Image 1 (cartoon, protein in one colour):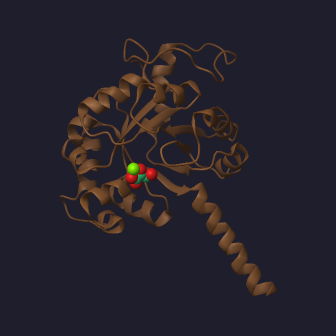
Image 2 (cartoon, protein in one colour; image 1 turned 60 degrees about the horizontal axis):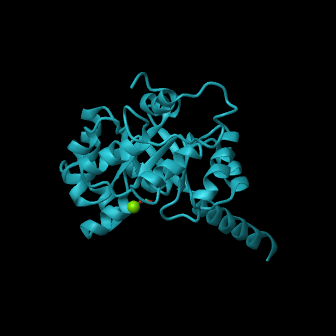
Length: 256
Ligand code: 3PY
Ligand code: MG
C-alpha cells in the first residue's frame, strides 16, 4: 500500500472529525444535512432504512455537498462490503468485529489484490472520472471495524494491529447491552481500566483512528473527553425530530 490518499488520507491526518449518521434513504435530505458542514456522513445499512439500492444516490448526494460518505454495512460479509464500495463509498464501518480474523476478513473485502480479495466492479463516478485504478482505490478507501462486545475489547490491541485496519469504531449501545451497564454510565466511566479508555489506548499505540457513535452532542462530548477523535455527533432522525419539537414549541408560545 502506498501513501494514504482521499478520505483515508484525510482520516489519518485530521486531529478530529465530526460525522452525521444517516438513517433515512432520502438523497435530498442527506444533501441538505451534509451541507451543514459535517466532515463525513455514514449511511447506516445495519439499522437505518437504507438498503444497497439506495447507496449510490445517497453517496452522490453527500459528495455533491462536498462531504465524504461511508457506509456502515449490515454485516461483515464480502458481498455487502463490495456493494457499498462499488457504489462509491469512501470507506466502510463494519459491525461486530470480535477477533483479528474478523478484522482480516473486513480488510480483505475492502481492498483489491494484492492487499485483499475485493472484486472489481465499481459503479459510480469511476468510468467518467479520469484515471482510477485498483491501487488508487486501495490507497483512498478506509476500513473501520466496530468494537461493540466485551470479547472485542479483550482483543482490541490485536484487532487494531491487523494491517489495513484504519480505525476502530465503537458502538456504545451494543457494548453497554453486552456489559449489562447503562450506556451513559459506560460513557462516563473515568476509571483507568474502563473499556473505552482501553480502546483509545490500543488505537493510539497502533496509530489507527479511534472513532465512536455518539448520536448526540452530549454523548459525543463524553467520547471526546475519553480520547475518541472521529465522532458521529448526530443522526438525521434525531436532528429532524429536535428541529420539529423546537419549531412547535416556538410556534406554540407565539401563536397558541
Ligand atoms: C452501537 O452503539 O452499538 C451502534 O452500533 C451505533 O449505531
Ligand atoms: Mg451496534
